[in-house]
Image 1 (spheres, one colour):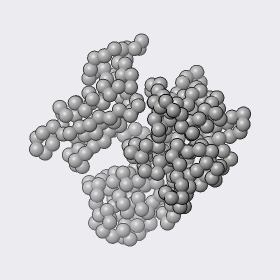
Image 2 (cartoon, rainbow, N blue to C red):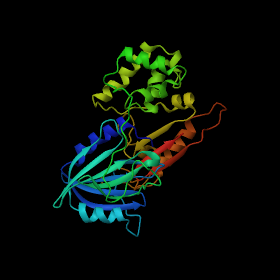
Image 3 (tube, rainbow, N blue to C red):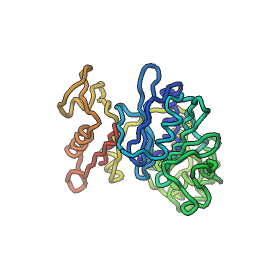
Image 4 (cartoon, one colour):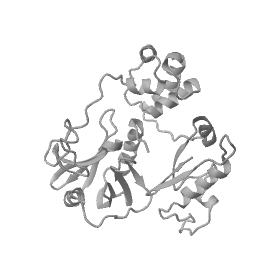
Length: 334
């Protein structure tokens, strides 16, 4: 699951609204690279999942209680329980134009920051006190990175800042035209991602598609005015932090790209507000009448089968569909 700058910004806003002021009640080691935090705030328990797995690095809230998955505690887990058990969450922040989340905690011994770096193969979770690394979930020595070591006792250094890029808020139509001319025959998404801070290849593809109808259009062949209009329509609300969930038309995207990735939660509902789970299969219900999924892959499997039944490839066959359930986040790949 790719997490870009604006996705991280939306997540930071959600975590600030949900967790700040809460107390850390439990720290769980889910596996060798993943943690679960139980935070009690406003008479409700919230569960935050963090992972430095390079294949699926991310952090997000979950609906259900997380479970411990390791028998032998790791050094980071031991220190987190020693220093942060009972700590107060005081802030959730994001460095400018970075995909990093800082979780700030206040304890009787002082302030600590748990730095979450969900950057694919470089993903890490780092406990920092007064600018010094106390421990990491994945230690990085000089043999792996001569510029930036992540080791206990070392000063914490953020990743090197991106240089030579424009901030998206200062980009103008004229500057965009210059970017396109300089990019030449390069693909438009790569040209935008390489020139403008915060623009990921995925967002660049959407800008390109809305401007030209082709997600991989060449920069040299596009109408700058159309790209500028698409850029303003998509990026300006993000800069204003106006987060609006998007709806993907699966068949259209699959026909256009030959693939489609969808992320849904257990509570996904139809246009009438009826939970999809209750319409796809029968199961035990809770006190509120909701189907109990209990972290299983039942919803993902049912959605995968629905896509197989409804979609057809160019050859007339059902597409290959895989459903993965990450904790309580179901992702369906078509």
